[in-house]
Image 1: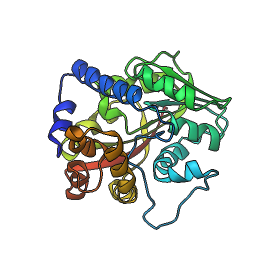
Image 2: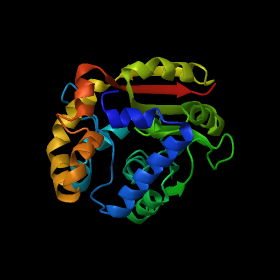
Image 3: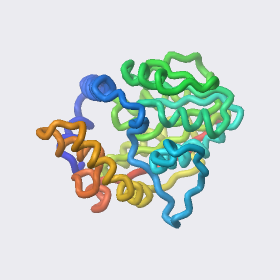
Image 4: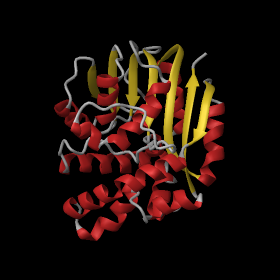
Length: 270
């Protein structure tokens, strides 16, 4: 993969990879508790220039690109009136968007970092929303508990995609929807497709959204660069810029030269 550090982490042993990512997200949540940092994804922008959603506050409008990635994923899960789970809810912004805009009966955000879960529960208090700590590869739920599962730019952190997808299948009700978006190295796509083919889930929609993500990154690079300059020590700013995929970083350039791709898939449980 284009970023050497990202590549090394991705190809570590599953157990060590889980430890590394949990340490990183625990540290970020503990050190940076600002509510104006609610999202950690790369964003999504429609290529025709049309913004598909009306946002109801200035705070949400500032986060439009991040929210649009969640909208892209969540609308496919048809959450209205349903019991919905987000795996990898991070700082909570995505689950908040689904809970407050898309009318699920219940929205649960699950994250491996207890610090992030604490932040999310402090930030958001919608009646149909809760956040809990848990492992994507061993979820603390009964089988067939949810009508829909969404997973946004999180699965590249997991120790085992096979275990994660198996757990998704287990917690989904029959007929339930799994909507997934994430990045991968171009060389890793074939192995990923094999995982999905063996998952027991039926693919109903799939697309490459790399161009949509790049357009969003172009729109939010200045904001990210300002935050990095303000909050990140100088000696790790370059690595953090890669992590954030700001324009011109190794991860951003990986998207432009095809070494990284951003995928979107929707599945249904038979």
